[in-house]
Amino acid sequence: MRAAVLLILLAVTIVGASALAFLCDDAFITFRYVSNAMAGHGLVWNPPPFQPVEGYTGFSWALLLWAVWRFFGVEPPAAANVLSIAFGICQFVVIATTALRLRRRSGERVGDAIALLTLACIVGNRSFLQWMTSGLETALFNLAHLVWVVLAFVPSERRDARWLVKWSAAAALAALTRPDGLLFVAATAAAAPLAFDRANRSLRALMTGLLPLVLVALHVAWRRWFYGDWLPNTYYAKVVEPWPEAGVPFLKCFLFEHGLWLWFPVAALWAAHDTWRHRASLLATTMRRMPAFAALGAIVIHVGYYVYQVGGDHFEYRVLSQLVPIGWLSLAAMGAQLMPRVWPTITLLALTFVASTAGWVHFWISRDMPMNGVTPLADRVPAVLRPIWRWHDSLQMFLHIHFVGMRCNQIAAALAHFQTRYPPRGDFNTDPDDIPVQVDAVVGTTGWYLRDVAIIDWLGLNDWVTARTKPWGREHTEAAFQEHARVLPAADTNGDGFLDRSELSRWIGSFFPVQIREDDASPAVDMAINLYAGRRGDALTRDEAEAFLRGILSRGAMAHERVPPPGYVDAFERNVTVSPEGVVVTPRANKLKPRIPAIEAEWREKARRGELKAE
Image 1 (cartoon, rainbow, N blue to C red):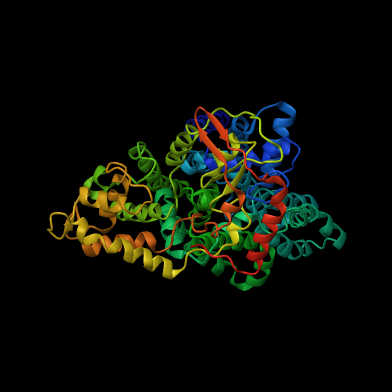
Image 2 (image 1 turned 60 degrees about the vertical axis):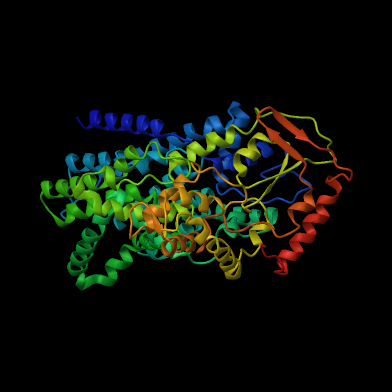
């Protein structure tokens, strides 16, 4: 019976992940790095004489895609999701094994009913299935993170030298897959001596157990030598200043859609009960559980960093998706220890699963969501649920304005749209001394299809200078606000004191350098009305319109706040025109290749002196 249920759940995992599979434009950034490595240039964005820039975030993921391409001839766009789903299957195995080993306080197993229901709840979670794909390194990172956390909770009597090697290896894999994993490496290095000393192991055994962490040190040293920085360039491009105004709504939406808000009261009860139970030996118990405390602390710091400092993530729940299996496993474990009978724990899991279906409700109702915009859901659910969904809608509108938590179906639609701009990937003849240059803000697809073109990344993810250019300051924001607020009275064409949908469309269209059609502005109009309409449900007062404008300008958009300094892009003399029919390169009078080292040296020195500011 158990084997049959496990096979069914495994099949659901594979089918569900395949049905939700998608690729995103950012994945093609890594694909370009791998392509350049295949061409013999190494993991670089633009080949020499451009200086190397680390615009990808998954070192081990890039190496794996490179190896698959080299040895099996499968290019990254075709290999990425197959590999990711394979790592998802590995997650399934780890989760199933862990769930079947959960125990009560008495030491007896929780039983198959609780273990298999826990596994079913995880397999039935949309984020768990969704982030087995995307083309990014997420599935590999989530696997390493899961193994590391599970090993941290191994009882002290079962921890030996092999356990420490596995724990260190999981931390090392996480750090080699995403820079976030450096936090887990630090936690491992700090906690291992205390945990290992409890077992009276030798210093030599401790050092042997931590040996996998040397790989991380070597990688960081190589990064510094090859790219010239201690962290990937994406860190400098994305992180501007603390942004909890976006991070907190991002976390609230995650907890609501995944039902994990129920985890907190259960955790509080369990912690109080466990502390009271071990009150006479609290210090000894803490030392014995040091790896578990280190893992818990690392998770809190990791989530807190993204919530407070970064402001969430551009993709929906990607940086929180690793919490899904850990949240459900810990919920089952705490429930089983608090409640000796089976049915209360099963009821707890069932209630949490029902709450977590909010994510599927959102997915199903908004499956036709436009590439730009948010589909309000409150009016599409039963009346009793509308207040909570209106709250959720308002958070989603706010996040979307700032490019935070973009939905995967939107990301997939955007990639399909971007791909229509380019001809089939291939070589085209160019003068080797006059490197063709293109400038773009959505560079993954551009970089993959235009493999022989140097790409200047307008947003700085793959550009060292732009990533270190100071973003627009408050004076620019205020000037933009005054400019667009000045035309508000004229936008109210009928003079009734309200801006209806057509008036809002024309006014919002004036924000953009190229005038947009009225129907193109409808997603932004929907957001404006849903977020700010107070006196009327279908229009904004001028004050409400000004509040909407302030909201847009309050803090830019995720990963879109840095732009090149004046004159920088012009120095490379863009000369590429692209259409679905082909690529046209205009020859330059003065060849670019010999001038590139001097151009980069000049602008990098300006950046080091802090002279660069967007205008």
